[in-house]
Length: 158
Image (tube, rainbow, N blue to C red; front, side):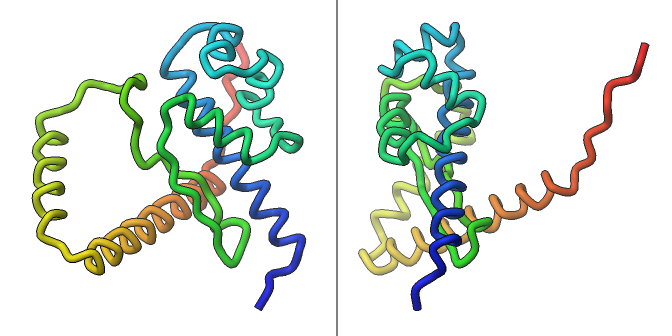
């Protein structure tokens, strides 16, 4: 069964916005001016400004993915039956990117994960990956739901 075209367009728009959001967050962590960040990502400053401000309706997903790769982001993209289920999730960083110092707990967890991954069959690894992505999707959807419910209070008038 094919989904309606409008749903496909809404899904693509949702992915486009999420990829841009992840790029903007990564750039913010790296610091610097828009010109410096744009130069680092290999795009003109006006293009980076569009990404930073979420005005990405005229940018292709392919361009955004290329920029995400240059930023050192490892993304997982998800679509769904509904456009609200679509999203781009950070699933890691490529070497050489800006990254916080590893914690002892993170190192132990990564070591344990690698050891257990070696004991899994390829089918079990695929099942674990799919379950992981389902959990990420549920987490992302819950975050979006919470953001919609959150009431932003205006700053007090002096």
